[in-house]
Image 1: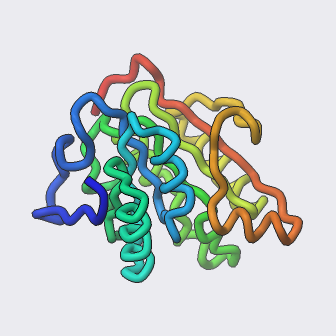
Image 2: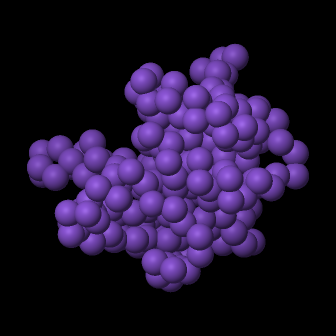
Length: 200
């Protein structure tokens, strides 16, 4: 399973068996960058399957090499835009945890429409999460955090959960390590789809 996931058809929803193995929870890392977070999670949780999503070819190849070198059979990467993957490719109720870590904050007001956290995206996130599944968002940009917090609250399809830095094993991304070395703080938002929510 290690390496790149190349769908047979990019214009249809993937089947469960295409994204993870039967009986294994699936975690998705949107914008996985150099794969440092993805690799550590896959090593720590061999009982789970992990899918990184990254649009840049060079990064995809780098992550694939890392997974192969570490012999991680539970980690793959898909070269596509994150929004498209969540809204069109991932099957309903297939993801146990979806991670959106350190995305581009698009700080200028005229660019806010480019931010990934929008109502349509949140609706798609809720669709792909299994009942009880979690959406975890982290950023160093306070204004984007407040924006995301407001969008999630207005959407109303999630239960807000506490997320302290030491709540559970959570390796740092390359961007997080860089920004923390510059003295920046990280803002965290953790949400859960209702346990009794019907799969859509």
